[in-house]
Length: 372
Image 1 (cartoon, rainbow, N blue to C red):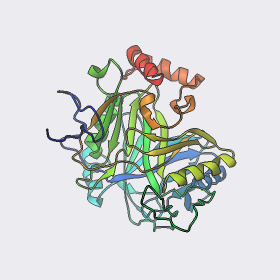
Image 2: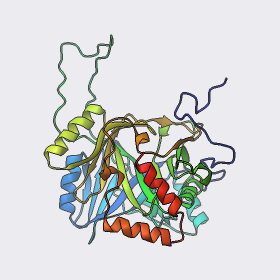
Image 3: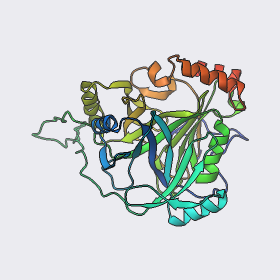
Image 4: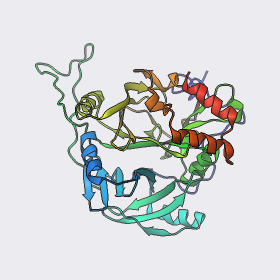
């Protein structure tokens, strides 16, 4: 029997006949990667302190903007603009070529504008079906590489790489290398999924579906950029159906497990709250550790994620809390967003009354998945 993408690779199940193919036949462009994420916060000083403790470097700072970066060369990871409330604005994706912006602008009836980014560049401003502003950018200049965190030499079995030397990882912030992915919740999952595939040429690595509701289609997708034979992150964007439209978390690559663990100890000593971790995911395989910043946004340190080229087809699996990790502590209520709040109740009522993909059966299926 010939080997397929679902035999000893990344998923036990593939698509059934007629299910979503996980890619567009004729996308407008093929985005190369995430560029950065955009937020608003009232206190940039506090935001910068957390950013330094979490492992970012400051790329640029003005009275109204804070640009954060990792050690890898490329665009910044995040921009935080001064605003009256703390909120997520939206993602910016990196175009592979400047000409992609012209193609995208023509197809969507928009304009190519100057990009407000250190070093300059151009951008197209879009709105996805969930209501998130999405920028597609081509930067004129890349930030130069910075010194990275030293990867520890590990002894294993008969492979002895470290001799007459001790292992003492310093207690310091994890040094962020780059932005990995963002996870979003949406009430219009199917429409939003198709928009990212059709507009930005992204492709699905894994679909999740609700128990007993596979026939209604997936309710979560882990989506990567399509760079042909070049293997890229298992997911650059992940989206799941839910009663709200909003940011769930974003993830930032660090060197290795010791960087995750020692950086986590540092964050704990500084008084920050771990949301969930340390563990290893199933979809994507990343080592993970989740933290809350002072504005309650969730950020993840990760290392050792899967890399897929364009020929890997989507896997399919049931959606469950127990299916989130291969090992690690049980997922917390904080991570799952399962703690009741007035805003969450309002989201549920509004979603069930609105014109979207949420209905009582979907809501009950999501609650069952959260407890399975």
